[in-house]
Image 1 (cartoon, rainbow, N blue to C red):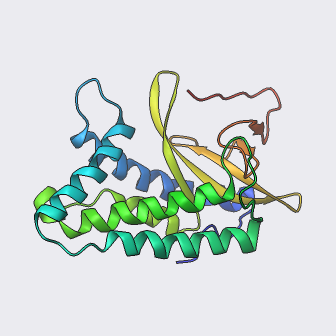
Image 2 (tube, one colour):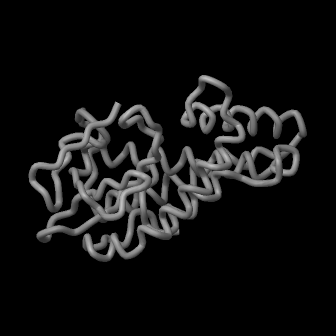
Length: 202
């Protein structure tokens, strides 16, 4: 898997939104079956990681999730370093490219741990959909609240005016309407069409 590539134009990104929407809907639907009352979908995702890992250890499964973490970290950080710059240990507010590599490793571990015991946990691995988004060169992030609703956010590596930026896709969007810099995470959003458009997350 080659992480965070290719960089797309906005029109190219818009052309695959229907596929992205389908994947995110499947991911969300499965997580909803694990979501407890008065809990968040994001917490359901985080809790499944613990459940899968504990179940795997109790079932005497070989620990493959640590190696999955190491592999994904190496590949994702290499791609980030090569294609978008590397911030090392420098402190920057918001997400850095190193952080997105860490997220890739985290999701790889979650997928691997759940896969080892998926028959004991319902038979469907929800994290396979996140891995599919990564395989498309995208950067899946988290569920964020907007207008009191939780929606999954996917970052699209874009090339706009010869500059590398991120297209911020919120599940349900019909087009990429906002972009931000790699070092920002859903902040300092810039509208792609209507300069009066605004969006903020909780």
